[in-house]
Length: 276
Image (tube, rainbow, N blue to C red; front, side, top):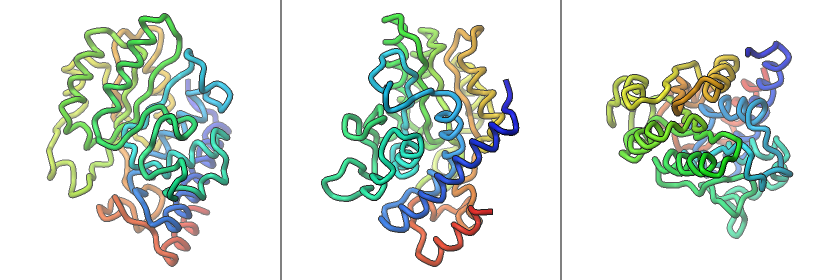
């Protein structure tokens, strides 16, 4: 249940290409949440390359796996993943944030192929995901529901209502993945609202709680495979410790890169670092 070297290299190259394209997009559009995108890209890369089995041809299959991006403000990174998976045309990345086009700065369902939930206000993805997972259970449908959320979203009460609901109904087909980069819009997670030991809190709410390095492809893969294994009877919460701006030295762990776009000069440096 571990990655081979070839599989690791494949996912790493995918993530690298996504990061480079996101840098180009955000440089061009000046509409950016690149820091939180970069902290999530390795997780999305493992999901799309090894777990979800989603293609542009099976998006209407009710038995498919479902991915919900709850932190919808990292739309540029999400669209780029979808483009590299062939779910949306690569050339459509040029339309990001353009008036009248389908690729807004926050994700929208029914507009962009592959997007399962409109997102903007935070803390909603887990409850929507729990509803979808419960519906699958009631209808006897296969497939799991994976929700990627930010650690700041754990400040929202709806997240804990979801945990209670999912545990009560034993939604073992629901996986919440928390991108824990520890930086929010206006400060660190401790400064804004110290959540303490999030893993212990979710375990107290009777969820299967795991903690991993969110940039280690093998750890991400093993956690996701464990999450919906045969012996699971609980929803799983994966706390993925990450670095905001991961991959570019002047972005890493810097609050200002929550919402900032690389200048032309910074783009050159970023692409050089990502090319190594």
